[in-house]
Length: 369
Image (cartoon, rainbow, N blue to C red; front, side, top):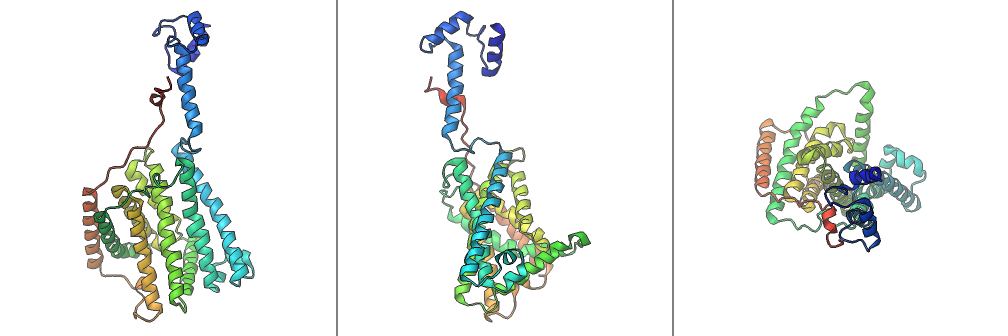
């Protein structure tokens, strides 16, 4: 019997035979008597059972370790993306003149021949199904809602918004230097498929803006600016960065790893450094402000400016396509970099401290006892 108690003692962290000074028979008698205060065994079993029952009442993914949370999130992303891509292909086939949906989904060159159907496919499959929908679903599964966990309820301050605008504009100029450095890298033949993929995507973007009118400009803004800004920020900064920050990586490591994932998943090799830096910048905007709306605003501004400038060029309002212009002078990019780092420093001085994550422990069982 003492061997049995030694096992219980080790698991329940009790001192059945010494600390509480009760013998075997007394414990069993007290167990029968309505879980008396004298029965240390029953008290510990009740406390453990209460914690387990509380866990079953919580959202199903709340107590998963960070690695499994990230795994579950990306699994949701793959599933949701597949479903919404099929939905987009169905709409294209039924209403937008797509004949072979399987070929249309796989071949970017085919998508370039039908820009409207391609926009619907990208908006539903990538913007909504790839990031926004899985982010909302995962937030519900891990917290029971979306407002608090994704900090959608946190209203950004005007100072944070203004700093985010300044940082985004200066970063947009600074990354021109990073694009130049990126273009100096020569890929081996085995990875030439990456450059071919990016060239095909650039051809698709050009098709989006061919014979563009204002209604299509609005649709382009929704698909290329609004959905990516909201969906990608909720997914990467609101979830991936948040989860990784609870690991050994810490806040700064989480920002870097999340930015790497953010850059890689854009599949744009010649813009890899630029996207990586923008990912880091967006990560610090979210971390220092603790409001997802700050990074969403910055992300939207960055994407919308590119859509707007492309539209103005396609409509003949401006003579130069600024989005594909040659390299900027080095003094311009470095000056913009200094401004950007200065504004980031100001943002850090106005940092909002993150709230600690609630954790269910045995101390929450006091009322139960």
